[in-house]
Image 1 (cartoon, rainbow, N blue to C red):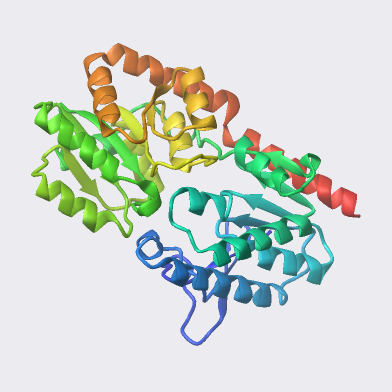
Image 2: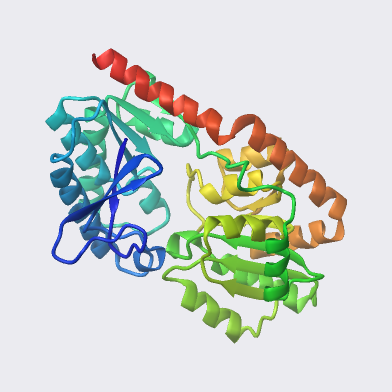
Length: 380
């Protein structure tokens, strides 16, 4: 197996200056890091949309160029976002005359339009045309949610060519049981004795984390000092969020930089609930990793994302859905669960059971493997 990724802003897979790519062996996988794009969330969420798109095109072009130098694969698998990744995948599949499987992790341009981040009609037309072209060139498509599949089929793709495989739960890494490392985090961050809600992930425009700051302000005004809101991660909006929390003189909001996932799992195990928060959108088809990590960790999930995510959480009694336009809803839910630890624990148990039953990663990996094997068999 060979994986092509970005080598820019990457300590793990650096590319030497003056070279277009570098190769590494990691757990039996040949990793090819190319000198284009970015994989630093703070960089990615802190630059303008057109500059990000330029970097996406640069990566796709160089990935396709470097990929042609590699050994012929049995199948090309490309995962998006961003959408131009599909151009590289389709180009390499044509070059090697092998099947192309495209994984859609977000619907472009619809997701950008719904967030209010894309309004230029010419760019919208261009992205719609690109998406349809890539969908048509793909041998098969993997969608991360039922809504994504519906959006793809709406472009004219046959439903039989699209398989829904959501993000998975790493039930080995994220576990409900606290650890000594997790307790060290609580001590370090001053969380002892406080009911703690954690958000972990990117802090960009799409994440809409002002919602959490406003909820914290409401709790502070109500003198609910026993409730802490922990934000773990980095991104372009983080300085603005920190300034806002400082302006409100909030002592119930704690920021921490991104940490390795193994450490994060220990920290999450020491928290009481997990928050999956995004900017309010007209409609939502997302499949966020952070929600599946929360399920695996056996934590009640507070989510302001409508659609299938809301249905999943509510139908399995794993947490609470929050009105995305009302930070008061988050404050109310935190008060409710802080006052009823038994209910919070029951929701956490339901979350872990759901993770093991429906979203355990080895089960979903087998489904993806079956898709790849089937398209390879049919192509032969």
